[in-house]
Length: 190
Image (cartoon, rainbow, N blue to C red; front, side, top):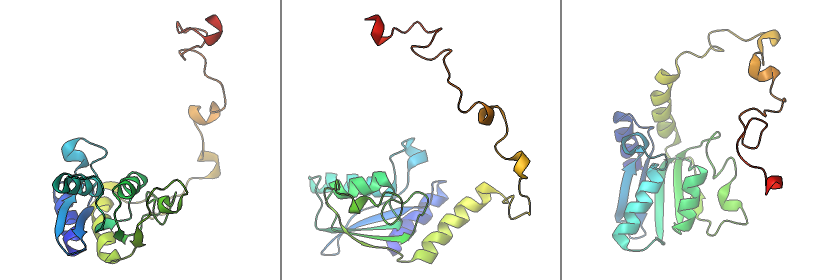
């Protein structure tokens, strides 16, 4: 996990979300290590876990990587959990829990779904404080002061106002394919 934390720190230094991952064989050999590279690669799938799985699969010459252990600093999202399952990773050890975007202990709980092809052993909360502190240090300056922390709270009359809230349930027909002003044909026209 310490190597994964180093990768997360390096990712933060590059301006990436500080998540790091390391894939290790059961004999202890590091097969691949990486931090997030979403911004650098302009690739929304360039999460640390996916990059590590890709590199290890190329190195091993196979998409199935079992037996191995994946160490990652943040609970994997749904995309990463699916990739972990497809790669047949034996065990996932993660640091910080992610109630908003995590998909292992939160959200869809991917590995417990009947459609999951392979469910690894999962150990969460390893070096959780350090991993969480990296994420907090990265995001806090970007978010700025919280309005709620500053004592501001919208009045009921200010909530859900504006043109979108008023018209949220109205049908939109103009400019919609198949709508009255559209040149797109309808199935009934065939």
